[in-house]
Amino acid sequence: MAVSMASLSCKGLKIAPTNQPIAPFAPGSVAGSGFLVPVPLKLRSISSISLKVQGTASPTAVEGGNSDTDTVPVPKVIIDQDSDPDATIVEITFGDRLGALLDTMNALKNLGLNVVKANVYLDASGKHNKFSITKASTGRKIDEPELLEAIRLTIINNMIEYHPEASSQLAMGATFGPEVPQEVDVDIATHVKVYDDGPDRSLLVVETVDRPGLLVDLVKIITDINIDVQSGEFDTEGLLAKAKFHVSYRGKPLIKPLQQVLANSLRYFLRRPSTEEDSY
Image 1 (cartoon, one colour):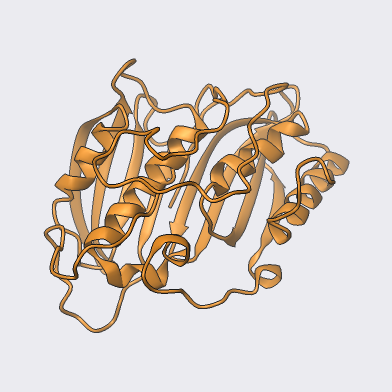
Image 2: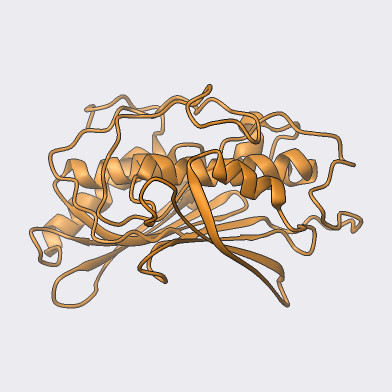
């Protein structure tokens, strides 16, 4: 899944710890009902959301797609905040098994969002459902990391609800689904790199095992050391989470020592997800 964030400035703001799993909610329910929401963090522009995973439906309760093939494809959820200045772009792929996703769109509306545009395209990797979404209250793209995470988890929740076979391919399925995915060596799976990216920002790239609340945790770690997130992309590809954040410090790229501090902080936290806050 991809996450794009725009001009995120959150210095000095605190986010509630999210070490504990986010409680699931049923598709179509309103956010906040059984949903752990940390203290809101306002981003000038961020675009990634996670969806909560609930118990699964019968395999026959398919949301309009094809689930006859034996090989289970890798589900992907991309949250992109860079492509459109006025809306958050969400792209969902699960081979050719997804239908019109009307229930997913209704669940997003129950989060206080508007689906302003939807389209579908096909390529060799399958059927891609793409939505442009905005906040119903403002008509603008989403800028709170908690809401972006709620979006991501809501989408994954609906995917597991209507396609139980996807739970074995998703980290959320290990927490809420009927099947447990394969074990992943976190030390091997986690990669953190920082690159120079122009005169006023750097590019942070993170790959790690996915889990509920990951997007909010990443933003918290970055902003806790007074680094600004300008924009970004957050991808969920099966058990793997990929994040790209454009970051800066006081309007400048990160110098090498600060790049190392950021990378070390992220590696430490991601390899020890149960580490208590402020222990490093």
